[in-house]
Image 1 (cartoon, helix red, strand yellow):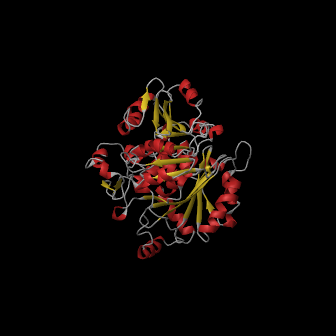
Image 2 (cartoon, helix red, strand yellow; image 1 turned 180 degrees about the vertical axis):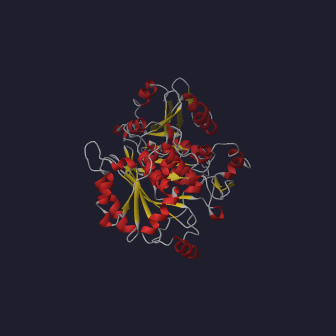
Image 3 (cartoon, one colour; image 1 turned 90 degrees about the vertical axis):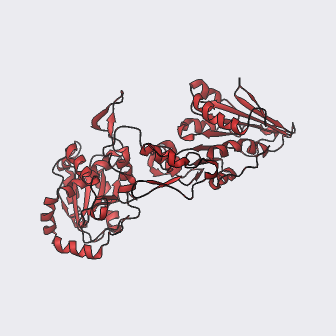
Length: 490
């Protein structure tokens, strides 16, 4: 059938996988769509011969979320490769391409998901397998329901299918979405829980690399360049938004399309360290907390160059502060910060008891002073203006040698997601951005992080606290400068 085609390395590995569920992600123009479509006749030819008809029977669905996208992109790519009458014939009334060559008898059914009837019709088919075109746009319920329809054609009385499966190609999905959870091995119902799954994931190299000065250069490992026009990617990134380039060129997860980010000046490439940040035992360690039934904490230091370093995080859900300290904070301190001087700050509402408990959060922290938590003094204000302003103060500055004045350890996944857009303002039904923060899973760590930054911005207060702990700030700064332990934290 003329399927002797040379594919890019990652696409080839994806096609050779026999996993029941497999996904490939990559940039525009990387060959992943063609690979997915060629899998249809290729897998059809691999089916066993029916014991009743002597034919290799199979039925495959190609699924896209809307008819215009199915018609203008997926089906166009199919007919570019397999024109009507080449290896089969297309029947427009049923949107089915029939391949009948020798003992091969395959049906390829193209389906969009515009309406409930479209979904119903798709999920009434008995299939051998299915391809999800641009899977990031396919609802999880469709994927899960399709898994119950594959392997049902041909029927077992004819010998059944040889191989069954669902495979999908896409640009990168949005961070926090169902497909993000599946690709990252997280529980899609609770992304705080790791939950390995059966999906075989194939990720192509980015088409371009972003340089330290914010420019883009062609990645020498980019795939399928030989089938693209000269300077294809150089033209693609011109005048495009950062999110477009991230998803479609750099092969990175998209940012949330929800409300306006609380800190739009946060830049992953600039503010997330390239490697683990090393805590300095000679520096004060600040534990900043947000309270309530979802206590969250960040652990921070500020180096002699004035850079705020976010070293660690504690994220909890459906628990109380005491349990968060006992179960998460103290074990973390023993493991990574033994012997550090610690200062606790956070939401000043923690000076009063909750509705169900008269014990103030500040008193709960003070109970653990003997276990190394040190002095506790909550923030001077919980005003959103003060909190946002403190973090933005550091995000907008460059320190010595042009390095950013704000760095987050790459292990602080929740903090990075929050700063990347999950910590955001509410959006009204008519699309307007409101002044109120959306209280979601990321707002707690986002606000805890701001309280830590408030402490460092209010630098005048730190001098007395350093003296209380016996610090000689000038001598310490000189010693750190000599050691230069943060010379290359990225």
